[in-house]
Image (cartoon, rainbow, N blue to C red; front, side, top):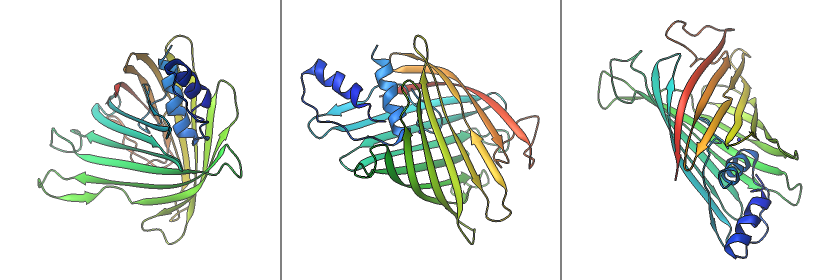
Length: 279
């Protein structure tokens, strides 16, 4: 979106005196997340979770890794707030990652509270016998909208999507880069389409890090190509981090600003500022 970095784990084990067995390669997204923790001991963030600076928990001898963070973004183009919760856990078979975004869209709805929610959950299964950098993955995306006309009315805001495929962690030194090649099944489509996901993390000078993700997929209905990316620059202070993110998109239906509504074949670049706390 990490070999936990086995190096990071082993350095921690050496400091604590615990005996921790070698850690299999995690999926790229999760690898990035944990790499960020190593940075804080001297990553990543986004609404994609992948993206979270902070600490991780090591429990020997099972080598269980877990992390949870909360974020709050202010969208400078839409002039609304978004809250994000992200979690990560690793077990003997692989890694689970998920996030939830809650928007407070006072522009489209006469409401001061939460107006809609979107979530993704991803499970990665390590297959080291084939390649230590390769994982199989199953993912699910969904969301709801809370209409202002009724306190109890909930309506699906997005078509639910199932995805499955392979994830590969590219063996670079400083740059952490992973790619997912996925088959995509969206509710309402008659057939399957595809999605390609890239996730990166690059530690910079001091406490800065550059990270993000990019999704490219197509619609079965009209073969429209959709691009969505969120590069992020973050600065960490203890368990807190702050920075700026830019939502870059092409043909992404949820793209709009106060000055421009969504249009097909239009490019959007919408900045946000955020702060995050990692537990």
